Length: 365
Image (cartoon, rainbow, N blue to C red; front, side, top):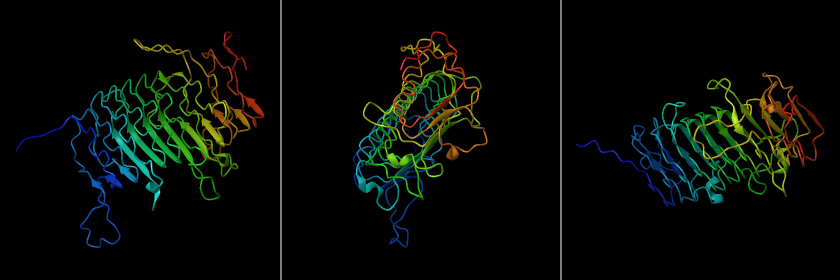
């Protein structure tokens, strides 16, 4: 026999419109008591993707897709320059994808699982963009090679209620621009209730050095009930964990939570205690030269009443009902803070240090 290995998954299941499940565990209908007919597509755990470079549209065009779980595949597409862009284009676009249970995508140890070791140049741009009714995304150890592209990866996932990213995009010079722009939109995401609130948790994401985070969550979180109360409000947390890189900085965070001209961001807590300091971009050969900017950072954030640096490390993210910077977070390299807290109608107090440390900083508006 021959050791046959493919280099492409391009359009592998494209427009397989009846598929509801893709993963490595066989799932059976309740009526299939003899477990003879697995539902959906069952992938082999030992599936060899070490030479696969292209997975564009691999699982695209499946409007009612409910569950994708790739965590059982060892080292999914860990080659350099792996292209996972538009991988789910046109899927999760029918509301029926949530019939029976929340729709979800899970991925682990993929597209460069080890920081700065493999997966250089991995492209996950637009991977889940426009998956309108997708509710849950979890990624662990993904796209950690240098110069990874994650821009617009989750953009316009309007129904996204739960996001967990752990050790993602931790190489140097990672693009997270507009990564989750337009998620969690009023009319799509379900309103908070006494038993359920939406949560967005990022641990060791994009903090390997030189990353771009501009507009990362712009136009997002527009559901008014997200504000809630201290115990029921939705929140986002950016934290450091076991894979943190000491002294790493990011190039820019401008417009990161900018709600836009005619909308508001209603998150009840914005926990940025793990956000790296912003410093001048010094990546060699970069085609973009970003000034270290925080302009429009919180423009239109209507769900918070205070910004401070007083939250201790032992305070849980769900207990934070403000904009929280880490104590000692350094503003000294920032050159533009214009419109930083503008159009925040419920903001009553800002208690942060050294925001004007740089004599040349633009603090207009």
